[in-house]
Image 1 (cartoon, rainbow, N blue to C red):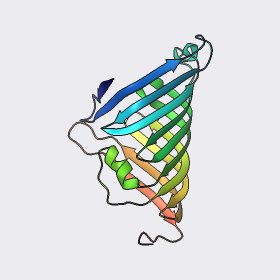
Image 2 (image 1 turned 90 degrees about the vertical axis):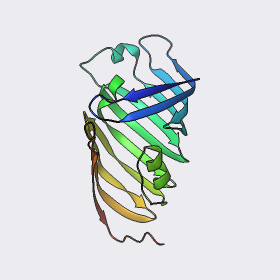
Image 3 (image 1 turned 120 degrees about the vertical axis):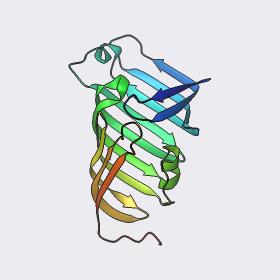
Length: 178
């Protein structure tokens, strides 16, 4: 048991990752590795399972480090399959992403945000992260049963500056009271 506190040098962001049970294993440096984590994210119970490229690939800066990651938090599931240019910083990220959340408001609260939106969300898209910029591109999904397409962008704010969030979405119909 333990806890890792990550403080972003460029912003005031502090992430607390509780470590109840963590394991990483590979047969050798040339074979894929498996990572499992059971713990918490900012105090919210969570689990993560990942199959990654080998430790030999991790040491190479000239190729993206491949990973298939599944995270479960607040009853929801996030899946990622792609590559990371700087895997230890979770930066230079690009990959297919699937998100299924029974209550997007609870999920955002786990991230430290507030939103009065107790609606289910299911979507797919291409996750891209470069430095302070996060983007979920080519999004297709549903919010509270309403189909949409769009783009989600987030720029992490520097110390003392809030994050900038932009959502561009096209709905045929949007009824959140249904």
